[in-house]
Image 1: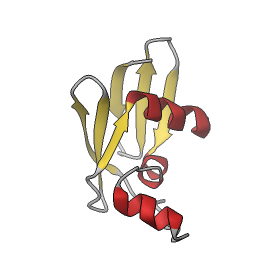
Image 2 (image 1 turned 135 degrees about the horizontal axis):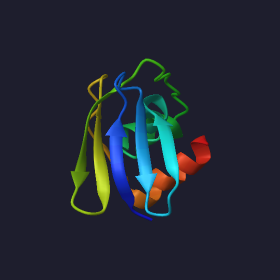
Image 3 (image 1 turned 180 degrees about the vertical axis):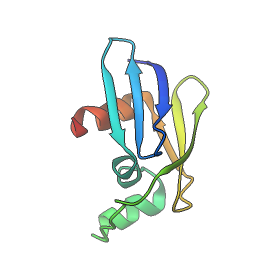
Image 4 (image 1 turned 60 degrees about the vertical axis):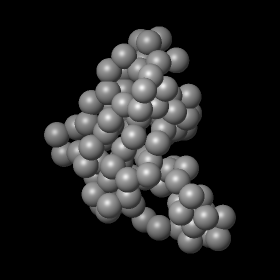
Length: 95
């Protein structure tokens, strides 16, 4: 599963992904931020330090080679790398 198109909404609150199987996913920025696999976020999750990311938006989103996307968020978090398979997992769980 590979995204054919990635778009950030005008309000920067959603990432729209069109997949090669024809599915279209709308993933909230808050969900992407909460599901980051960056070390600090993983540690916070382990320790039960749940933060609310309701007001977080996507500042930028750039492809990492042909396997992932790197998302930068309005709270300064810039370690969000989402391989395609993980992005699809997030999309399917958010639906």
